[in-house]
Amino acid sequence: MRKHNALIIVLLIILSACNPDLDYKVTGYTQKIIVEGRIETGRVPVVYLSLNVPLSKTVDSTTILDHVIRYAKVTVSDGEKTEILTSKWDKDYFPPYVYKGTEIVGEEGKTYTLKVEYGGYTLYSQTSIPTGFEVEQINSINTGVDTLRTLSVNINVDHSPKNSFRIFTKKMKDKRFIETPVLFNSGLNLRGLQTFNISPQVAKTDSSYREGKYFIAGDTVDIRIRAIDSISTIFFKDMTMFSVVAGNVFINEVKPLNSNISEPGFGIWYGCAMRTLRYVVP
Image 1 (cartoon, rainbow, N blue to C red):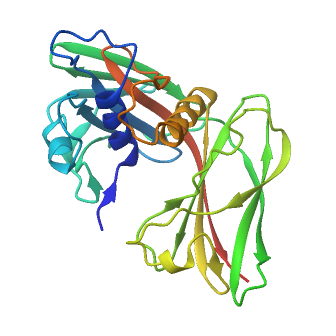
Image 2 (cartoon, rainbow, N blue to C red):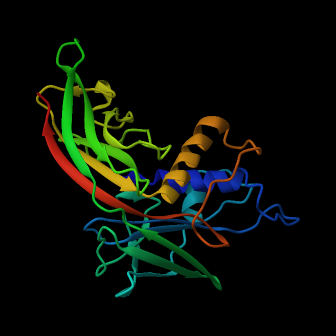
């Protein structure tokens, strides 16, 4: 099943619909290079690139495919190694094109620089993978309705680095990890042992759609927790607020997202400290 790259699609909508900081020309369109890149613990870097869609065009699958960037030079460095990422089709995602590394692997505490060269422009960004965090316990809560359960996770939050958390789950019958649509510790103010509820937002095409945000006793669930830094937190928090506040995404008066990509780029390059745990729901 093809996964939608929701972040790239949302950024395409944002930049086609509104962006008060752009210097629009008479044509009403200033070209931007949209970047979504990440590097996770124990994994190679991946980067998706697109051009923003002109105001006059509708954002649909055909338009998105037409604006995918296929011939950029994408370079990642960890201060010791430098690698040019390989570009290829990725049929598991939409848009189905990715730049991916083979040599550099994410390590917690390390800083990674990104350079994108395309159309005579060079974009820069930098991120770090947060240091390790402790997952203390997974909890199953009886809902009182047959075998339906809710889950929560206890995480020991170190306040000093100001990290936040994104949580994803995958049941054995599902084909993808599904995110709980909340950025935990988005205020960057929590510390000590914290309990976060897990409520995945399933789609109609998911095998577990009928169960909604619940789990069933006996389910084997993979729980993936990503820690991200404060810069990435602000970006994803703003993107969530855009989705909620805008309603109709073609409203013009929406605050632009904070981006850590240099001009004329827009988007995010972020590091994730990642933990994946398997849990059988009692």
